[in-house]
Length: 434
Image 1 (tube, rainbow, N blue to C red):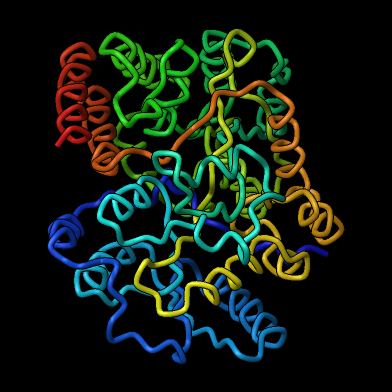
Image 2 (cartoon, rainbow, N blue to C red):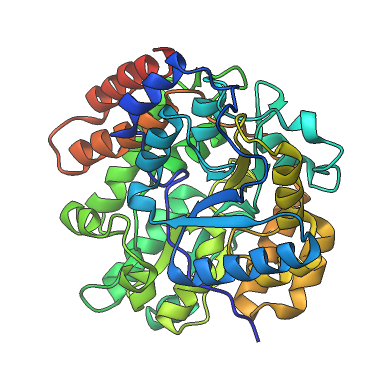
C-alpha cells in the first residue's frame, strides 16, 4: 500500500522573491566562494520546505544515509514554504546558508548569478547525473552549467473527475484531439447541467499556464539565454481566454477564484467534487483524489494535438552551497537522494516522479493506483517531442506575481486584456533585464 503523502498545489516556484529581494541584493557584496569559518567536520545542513509528513520521511532518508556513510552527519533544516526563501536570502547574505539547499523556480539562477551555488561538474566523480533523464538533467543547468539536481519530474496536466461529467449526462473528451474551444463548450455544458456551485472547470489559467499557452502558440515564456520569448498579442489572447472561462460560466466567478488561490487539495472545487476539470501539476493527482474520494484521472491538456505546449518540469532542485566546507560529502548526499533505490522507496513521488529510471522501477510496487497514474503520465510525455525548459532568468521570480495581478484586473473587469497585456509585458521585461 502506498504511503504517498499529500502535496501542496504550488505555482512553479512556490513564492515570488518578495521580501527576499533586498537580502539577495546584498549577496553581490559578499565573497561567496569563501568557506572560511566553516568546519569540515561539522554536520552538513540540509534545508527543504514541506509538511510534517515530508519532514518525517526525510528524516528516515537521512538516517539511512548516515548508516551507510558513518563519517557524514546531516543536520536537517525543514521549513514552511511561506518563509523559506526569505530565510534563505537572509542566511546567504550572512554567508551562513545550508550546505545542501532545496530550491525551485528561478531561484537557482538568482543564486548562481551571485556565485552562491557550487558548479556541480566539480564534484562529478561523486555526484553521478548520467543516470538521469536528459530533460531532468538539463533543467538544473544555468547557462549550460549544472547548479541544480532535479528531485523529480512534474508536468502540467488536466485532472478530470469522470463522475461529475457523468452526472451532467455528458461524455469524457477525447484528450488526444480536443481543443480549447471544445474545452470551454464542455465545461459550460457541465456547469449548466449540474447543481449550483458545481462547474466544468475549478480554475482558470495560471502563471504556469502562460508558458504552456505561449508554447502552443509557437513562442515560449523564457528563452535559453534568459530573455522573454513571448509577445504582447500572445499574452492578450491568454488573458482573453482566461476571462472567457468566467464569462461563459465554464468556471466560477472572479471573486470565487480569488478565494481558491493556493488553497490545499481538500479546499479546491475538484477536491470537493464540485468541478469536472482542474489544470494543475500532475503530482497533485493523488492529493486531490484523496481529498475528493473520487476516481480522478490525468488527461492531456487541450490544444496539445496541434502543437505541444507541455514540458517536463523539475518539481524541485537540490543545490549545494559554493561555501560548503565539504563539497564531496554534500555531493554524496545529493547522489544518494536521487540515485539510490532505497531512498526512492522512502521518498516515492513526494518530490515528483523520479528522474532516474532505476528508481522509478523500484518504487512502482509501493505506489497507489493514482500515484502510478502520475508516473504513467510522465512516461507518456517522455515519448513525445517536447520543447525544452530552462531555469528562469534572474528576476523572473517577480513575474510570478505580475501575472496573477494583471489577470485579476482582467477577470474583475477593471482592465481590458489589451491594456493588461501591455502592462504585463512592460513590467516583465523590466524584471528580467534589471
